[in-house]
Length: 378
Ligand SMILES: NC(=O)c1ccc[n+]([C@@H]2O[C@H](COP(=O)([O-])OP(=O)(O)OC[C@H]3O[C@@H](n4cnc5c(N)ncnc54)[C@H](O)[C@@H]3O)[C@@H](O)[C@H]2O)c1
Ligand SMILES: [Zn+2]
Ligand SMILES: [Zn+2]
Image (cartoon, rainbow, N blue to C red):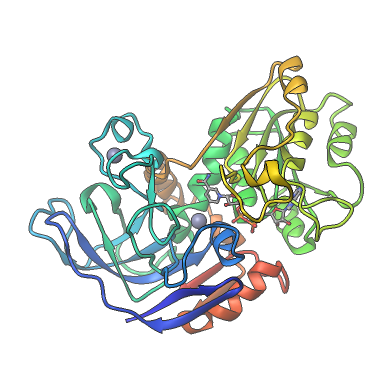
């Protein structure tokens, strides 16, 4: 079958790879109809992880069940399903507590598994014609049959629940003001989720005009961080006080406001500490890594950043971090889409055949030509 294969930094190719097979009685095989490219894929694409050539990318997968193992109870051939990017068992301590992003059994020696991702276990990705889904009864979320809302439901695999998770980590409540750093797909979904949770005002910080325009299109206030210190801009718009809550949807590859070719890995964390009022809270779904050989200095290479911990303490701020536990939210968010209460696909800029993946990766990586979110259709 055809699949998107990582070749070397800044290069993926669509190649023939072996078709997956059922390996366990609770597996299903899914014929992929939609698989999105994610900002998380770009860390691997840019060679900023230990990803080896040959890995099949794709952790945001939706499709139709083609084959079920003999132990599958709740699913049938022909069901349309979307899978959380997390691979999870459903029975370990963390899964039972709802922390499916930190499953203890699917990736021995590590808490958490995912499809098509370095260090996240032996699970090839779904930017391909077929995907094997382990522990399928637990990991498949059933969707209404047909093709309606396909691009909305596809976002249930990661970015919609992840944006929502950012708000959950920051405990965004009705009436609050929220600053979201990053207007990539995750940041836009965090801003949208803050609105769904009843925020009174949402500020979205980025530098890419098309992305800031998307934020504005849903009623958020765009903040261009190249036009001046973003925390000062936000304070100026909140009577000097700052916002109640903040979300980091950028992560360790954050760039400088003065020169966006230059990385400043702690800049967003520090800007958030400035932007949020005393006793507020931060949600950090943006990725930070314990080892980054391409980091800007020795400390960053060890995953150690200069964060204003003194200010964080002085202001009594709380912070939550980590991979999203997608399964904790995906059913409820699916039902909001089905009921017409949520339409996250406003972020989708491109829907392309699998064969165009190499070009789509190049453009999405450079954040040009309005490439905000790409869905591939194998
Ligand atoms: N926790 C999770 O489960 C989870 C899931 C998916 C993605 N992620 C992570 O979330 C982050 C965002 O993902 P994405 O798909 O939106 O990525 P993306 O790379 O498309 O978006 C990041 C955005 O941040 C902007 N940015 C860079 N420096 C900035 C700064 N100093 N201030 C404000 N904005 C700045 C960029 O211009 C870009 O638009 C990534 O780190 C990704 O790995 C985490
Ligand atoms: Zn993703
Ligand atoms: Zn588990």
